Image (cartoon, rainbow, N blue to C red; front, side, top):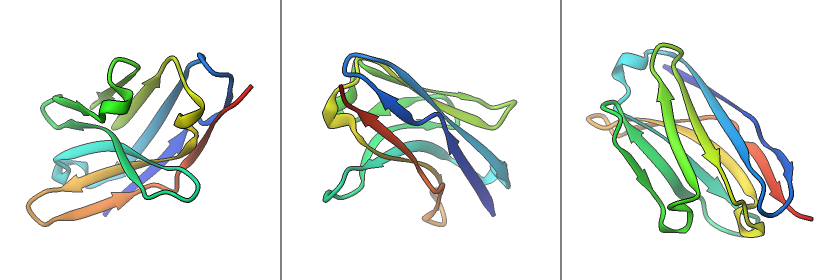
Length: 117
């Protein structure tokens, strides 16, 4: 089992920045990919960014050049640095961990990011 706890959400003005953190615990050696997804009101959950065990990142087109995903393996923590935030980035952001071979996903409870003036 893997437990994920997000933090760092909040209210920010357009053009501002936030850094989200996801603290993971449990059987982390079994995790292949970690990432961030988001769900805006009335919309489906969508991928924001992922990072592999080897450190390879992947981003949704909508956040490329503005968001950066990183991981600190020693702390079992994944970060999402979000810059130049837009109102359309408003959503609940969820941390995800994947075990690819068994097709298992673990999810955190989410942290709300609101971009508004």
